[in-house]
Amino acid sequence: MSAKSIRHNLYDIYRKGKPKEMYKEIDLDQIDVNREPPAEEPARQYYFMKAAKAYVRQISGRKGSPLTFHVSTFGCQMNARDSEKLTGILKEIGYLPTDTEDADFVIYNTCTVRENANNKVYGRLGCLNGFQKKNPFMMIGLCGCMMQEPAVVEKIRKSYRFVDLIFGTHNLYKFAELITAALESRFLSGTQKKGDSMIVDIWEGTDKIVEDLPNQRKYPFKSGVNIMFGCNNFCSYCIVPYVRGRERSREPEDIIREIKTLAAEGVVEVMLLGQNVNSYGKQLERPISFAQLLQKVEQIPGIERIRFMTSHPKDLSEELIETMKNSSKICRHLHLPLQSGSSAILKQMNRNYTKEQYLKLVDKLRAAIPDIAVTTDIIVGFPGETEADFEETMDVVRRVEFDSAFTFLYSKRTGTPAASMENQVPEEVVKQRFDRLLKEVQEIAAKKAMRYQGSVQKVLIEQINEQDASLVTGRMSGNSVVHLPGTEDMIGTIVDVYLAECKGFYYIGEVR
Ligand code: SAH
Ligand code: SF4
Ligand code: F3S
Image 1 (spheres, protein in one colour):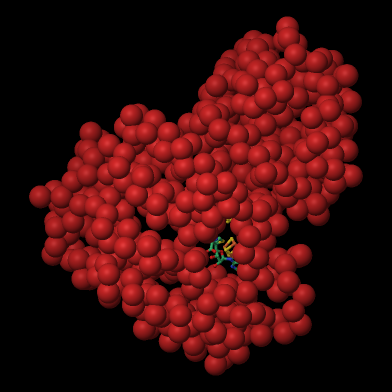
Image 2 (cartoon, protein in one colour; image 1 turned 90 degrees about the vertical axis):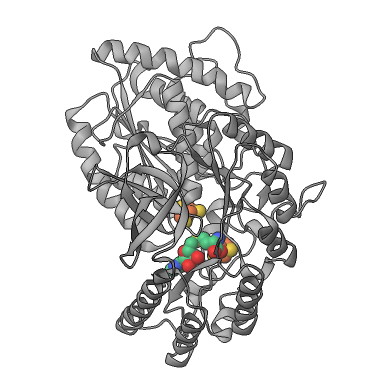
């Protein structure tokens, strides 16, 4: 099969909406290695890494310099972790990292949770085209949640024909295989790049989890760890279940093995990642609760801090609160998205808790762990939100006194139930409520932060301060940011810091 037919087959998969089975039938034996690619993962991807490496060597010979890459990440921590997997593979096949998007391979790992996330990508693609016109070796890839939307892929195929490779969230593990096909199609098929040489491979879903692929962590001392993928909650405003598929948990043994390896490599803090970590493990053949998983992670020597994201209030168990309380490693921070303080709106959002249940949960949590920092996400202007509903949200904000809150303007996501609700709130009203909420949230956060001023707290030093190289920046257990005089060798260590001054959202401190 020629490179051209490979890419046409890949496109067919998307156009016909065929699931993964069809992909397996594709014969990639034109690729220049001496044996058939193995069928099993991850062996198959290592085979393609080898093939891609040979191509990269060949192409950089033609160019006369090493090939460079840049991965740009949009969206949440899940995407950030996925980008580390892309980076791991690009390094493995011989690309060198560079800080700019003027590189030989640029990939955008996209987010589509709100409309403005999409607009950012379209805006920046224009700039990439400029780079590509100057650099005939430059390839452009797009992946992530936005690519799971058929309308997006159609638009890119029509209006952004210079893109080389598009894939989605379900087949990210095939990156080595896909980049091999893209390199071949672009540089080794003997034809010049044309507008139709784009490779598109999008799956509608998968139940597969592939372990043991390379990844390159952004930080040597801390790491995200996926514990589950997808989401089954279908909050009525949210696109994530459509673009990330159904909930699947990794086996606890695989998670523990990964964290032990991380610890051996010097990682001291892990962030366990899932859209709803509180439902982790329920569907495994041998079910296990999230709290039980945490207890296992707690026992791993070398790991000093454990964080997790995100907790859905409806599934937060007593067992989890007890586990946090008894732990010396789980950080004193819980991100507990509220979304709205109105029980009527929460019902429309399909969140499965009421205002009262949320407030009670926070009370229970603070009774058990008094020093815990509670943060949240709030959406303003969900369809049908009245002034009274909005005041309910303000009421919860004042009563709970969140340590910080991410506030979002409601964004209509095509295909979600809320998008077709008739009573959409006018833009000016939403904007005005948003500003009121933001002011309240910020005032409370600044007041709450004052409580640590003058105390000594443990801080994990993360980096040299971006503005002032004589300072280092770190985080407290509750996730607050601290700047203090320090040096590079402190990065990755946990130190006692006197918090001399609270500046609202951060502290200025000194080592004790
Ligand atoms: N799984 C996490 C959230 C993932 S999305 C959870 O359930 O908490 C992160 C945040 O984006 C959400 O908490 C929500 O506040 C916000 N969000 C999701 N869809 C949105 C939309 N359509 N408009 C505005 N904000 C949205
Ligand atoms: Fe979206 Fe709700 Fe799932 Fe969070 S829990 S990802 S808000 S559907
Ligand atoms: Fe965005 Fe996908 Fe995360 S839509 S918020 S990157 S799961």
